[in-house]
Structures are given as structure tokens and as C-alpha cells.
Length: 115
Image 1 (cartoon, rainbow, N blue to C red):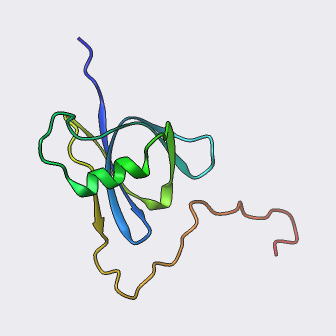
Image 2 (cartoon, rainbow, N blue to C red):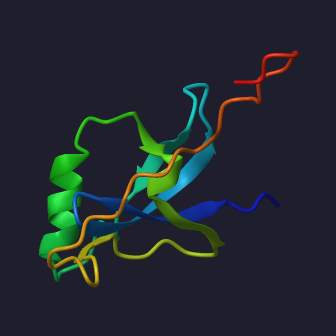
Image 3 (spheres, rainbow, N blue to C red):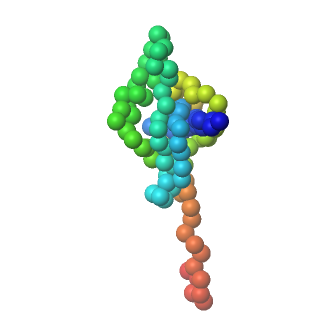
């Protein structure tokens, strides 16, 4: 019996926090990115429609794979069931923009002239 793996991905995007569900995630060949495939949205038979999830469906309509920068990822959890994808405002985003941080640093210089 094979269990289907589902991942919940939380990440920052333009002063908002996205929470999405996907069946496949991996480290991308593009340096500094996480590759997310097979996006999962809420139950197809649900009577109540969530506007935030509909916005995400529209935004990612036709997307086979998306690449999320590693520095934008808040957390990735493996969950038993998918949930409702959401877009929430990021707390404390009034007038503060975080300073970008590099995902890696250049290797130290070697040799007698280490400038």
C-alpha cells in the first residue's frame, strides 16, 4: 500500500504569506530555488468557495512547476491531508522591508595576497 505524500509550503511573496499544498518538492537545479510540482487545491466538491484559494488557483493556472527562492521559504511540512491554500498578510509589514540575505557566501580567497 503506497501512501501519497503531501507537502504544505509556507513562503513570503510580496508582503504576503502564501500557504500552498503540493505532491512533489525538490531542490532545484537553479541555484537557490525550491522546485514545487503538482499543486493541490481544496476539494473539488466543496460547496463553499474560499476567495483566497480561488485567487491562488487563478494565479497558478496552467503552471506545471514553480520555483520558489530558498530565502522566501518559511517552512515545509509533510502532512497527511491537503488543506485549503491561503494568502495572508505578513505580520508587521507596515513600513519595514527585510534586508535581503544571500543564500551562500563566496569561498575565501587563498594565496599570499588574501585581499
